[in-house]
Image (tube, rainbow, N blue to C red; front, side):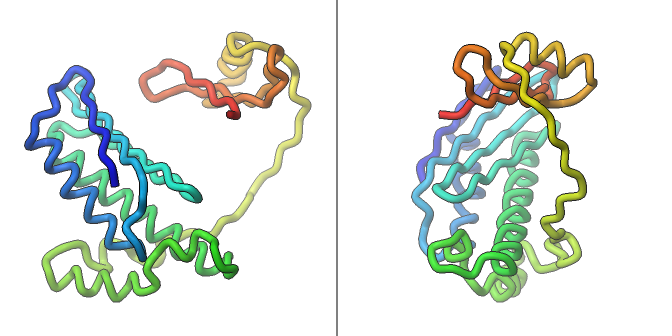
Length: 195
């Protein structure tokens, strides 16, 4: 894995970089082969809080976790725990749902339970940190249908704010593509558009 570590309002020291690479690198044990992926790490200090965001885009899977903590090293530990839970969730769901060759299922080791038992003896995460009850089913509980009105991003943001929603789907008046605007945790807005 290739690491792209950057800091905002924070100098990324060699010790911080090394700690991130060591901790995130432990995720490789969940895969059959070492994933060829870029690991994007953003460290930020905002109002005396450390914010860490890790994104690992892979061909058939996107792993992403964010954590805020007073201590950056603790934030790194918490983000890695979240990523491990995501991997376990994906693995469990794809094992149940997708059986064909070449699916996401074949990215992960088949013996994750065995791996967790092995890690527990080494003083690392054990099965107790990933209770089976935590894995939920992929269940759609509500479906909405609506016409996509052509508009620009600014109008979509106004519509979203009027409705009190965290995101809004619309048809881009210029490109004709389906876009999504969303409210970020920092209070600003984001735009998602197809490539």
